[in-house]
Image 1: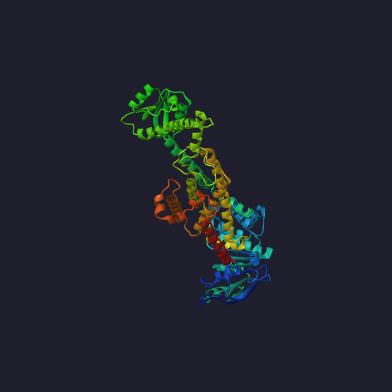
Image 2: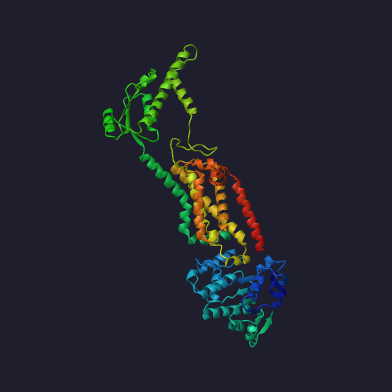
Length: 223
Length: 375
């Protein structure tokens, strides 16, 4: 369980996040929406321990972010918006590279299977030859090497074709349901958010997103 | 460490040719330059004809001394050939060690011992003749000393022969050489072939090429500093700083292996001596330039700017080092320049220089500061 209580973040006098509270249970997928600059990425970065909140508390599986950060990081999988892979390596080399540095060891076959599970089958192909969708899948696969319980994705499907987008969506749903992973992700694609997420957190003052989501039938939290 | 080695091997596999090229450059370039210049030196030796009309031990010793002289190429000729070759300018000059030279020296005769031939184009006649005269004077000096001692010993009980006295004077002369210019590392045995005169200081040259190759191979520090990759280090076993430092250690190990290869190659092909102090100095130098190169990479984001600055830095080091051909002018005029020269402590066999401490402190601060921002 991820529990966020009264979380705020300010840059100087500018408040970006103001007393946000929510929780995420195992197997849940939460969508984060809002206009540019609303604070989606800031919230994701705070949940990923990459930024500190101004106030509030966060607990992951009863562990405090403030006191047990190194241990918490082992349970987090973070998929950055930019594709964070070695372009000159093959898919295999990228997976092995990050597996060697990861907390949890996996065999080559397990790494390969991880890629195949999300329809990334170009194991020996240099990354620079891959399509944008394949690169995004690899970006996600690397973040899953250490088998995290909380997965944070910052616009994981931006700029890719519909087929790859669907494949990633199917895979995330499978991760949540069969492996009980908690997933939070940001996107500007409302259809994707509505289709994939169990609940939606709407950040910012712009009513545009709330109006679109109002008929989705999903539980919406607004901050 | 094995995990870091594995990940580094993946990088090295991708750039194996350029990696080997830059690792071997200091060895191959030093060999090529030292060999190349020695070949040019060989071709530019002055051709001098020697006619040996005497077969005595003293005459043979004089002939060998002339032959052993650098910058002179001795050609054995008869007196008639000598005249012809000097006339046709194929020889710069010719010298005749006439019959009875040895006997004349032993008898204490001191003039007209050598005959010379020269032409109007014997440009090197003056220094060559002076050199041969000095060798003859050595012989006559030994003889004179022997005669003097023999005369003196007539008044004492101890009896010395002429040969014993000459041998003793040669021994004293060798012990008290006025001038010895061979470069040696402090506290080590000198080079095996001490008569060799080279324009290049092998280790100085190697050090300069090593600085260049180290700077260029440390480009990974700039290339791999990718903003999108950095967040991943929060979720792996190593902090970014730790990862980089372990890679610096791996590169130091790799470079040092090639440094040891350089020691063996230079010993084999250039007769450079091997000693533990030399290896220690190389290790200290290697650690210094690797730490320096790493700090240098931290200052850059753009790899092309890094390359051009690295070349410039290597060039400046070459100029201020004076390790190639000593350029005392710069350091005499601006003595503080020598403080910035990383090659100098290495050539002086200093294991720890102030620069080691400076680099170590900078890296320690960077590590602690980076670790805090990462935590």
